Length: 230
Image (cartoon, rainbow, N blue to C red; front, side, top):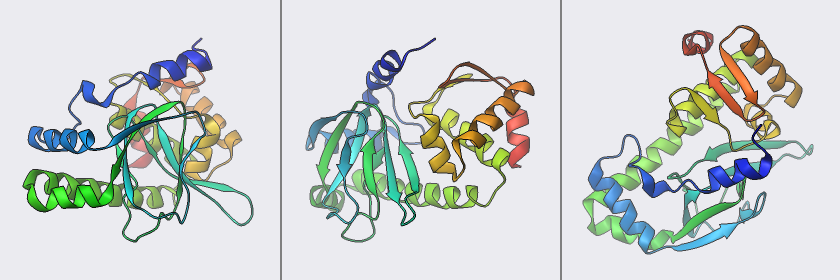
């Protein structure tokens, strides 16, 4: 079984530069690598805050290794996770001048911090950088919309959709090694941790997935999962 330390070492070692991000033209990836060079690399321990809610949105953040989450603690004490970010993802994009959510490292992570004004300035004179910034913005909006739709679905639909989303984003063929614990998944999907665990067991009993370790999930029958969210 993969231990917590071994798991974090595996994900923390994934560098975003090892492969071109899916869906990005080569020129756009070159532009983002140029943007990354003008940023500062920082390391964050597990659960460390990257930025806080209502802090000035002066910077953008790119995950080099590890994983990050955005979240908000409600008045009743419950935590709502807005999104997860994996190696290669950029986050911190805001329509206003302040962050609407806080951001934390899920596991030990390496993050490149890039001044927002510098990115905007580069986009103003580099068409590829401008296209990439637009692509990132629309992708973030689409991800937010999809997440809101998730929260209106049944528990099996939410968990199945999450597994398919993570498999696509992590670009794994047959299995997913999740960087986040099940409590994070529950807070992202608006479910209890008991419900998430029960759904995973049901999927396993239906031979749709296998659970060789708590955070390792083998996708055996994607059609079954896709059928739940169709």
